[in-house]
Structures are given as structure tokens and as C-alpha cells.
Image (spheres, rainbow, N blue to C red):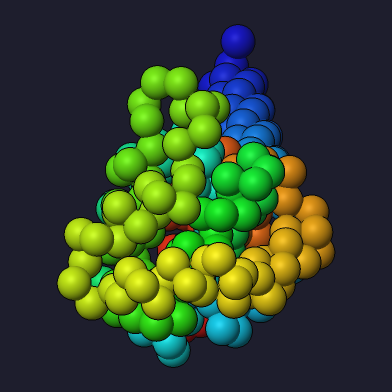
Length: 227
């Protein structure tokens, strides 16, 4: 074989390798794009006006949790994901976080929501601590038992001196914050929430609320688009 033929074959091999490399890169991009698309569902921005909010009001990214105080998965999310989210993004001013009550567990969910909204009405600065304490009070075993009672919510509220228990008890008995609970129920229906917790980042719902890497990637993407 002469030198010219060898050069031609070498050139062809190099061209084939470049083509295969390009195809491989394109395939990888398609796979990654499909994975990113599959991890979220566009459900629309959630109106958090009047809702409990943690973080700076002008933060560019809004993260909303649709949760239920009776839900063990919500308790787990609050222990495993929420603290990291707060440390990485809420405390830096990049994210504002809000919580919407879901009533999937019936009367106890309603009662817990009424209690939390009553606390928020009279002592907004106590809300998030009460919120966390109510989840802590959720039993790790037999959580389906009737534990989320008015007595339990008042017992939890007693841990915080800023909460007027007499006022809170009266508010719950008269269901003074039922309009707030109904507003949350309307948001649940509007955004077709089917599980708790449901996590929404700037109108996009995570298919796996426990995938913090996916939450982080979505927040970072939203922040990049803001800049």
C-alpha cells in the first residue's frame, strides 16, 4: 500500500472517529435533557400572597411546599431536605419558602391547619418554630392514630411564650382561620396536588421531592436565568 492510500485511510478513520464522538455527545445531551425534563412538571406559579413565608420577600426564586402535618413523608422531608434548602438558599437571600396546608388526612389535617394558621395570625414570628415543633410531635409509629388533636396543638404551642394559648384555643373553636384553610384547599385543587409533600420551584413541580440534587439544579437554573 502506498503512502497516499495510507493517508487516505488514516483520514477516513479520523473522520469516522469524529463522527462517532459527535454522535455520542449528542446522545448524551439528549439523555440529560430528557432526564431534566422528566424530573419536573410545569404546574404554574403558586400564589403565596398571605401565606407564611420564610426568607427575603424579594428573593428571585420561590419554593413552595404543599404539606400535611399528619403526613410522615412531610415530617421526613422537613428533617432531611428542608434544613439544607434553608442553609443553601433561603439564608443567602436567593429563595423565599412558603408552606401550603393540604387536607388529605381529614379532620386532623383540618385541625392542624387551623392551629397553624391561628398561630400565624397572632404571632407570625412564632409560626415556623411552631410548624417545626408540630412535625416533631408527630409519632414515628402509628402516625395514623388520632394524635393531631386541639389538645396536642395547644400543648405544642405552650413551648412558645409569644403564643397566647387562650386566644389560640378560642380561634380554633370558632374556626376563625377557616378562610385561610379554604384558600389553601383551593390552591391544592388549582395545582392538582396529588401527594404530600409536593415541592414547587417557580411553578415547576419536582417529581421526586426528596431529590435534593434535582431541587438544587432547578433553583440554580432559575437563578442563572435571573442574572
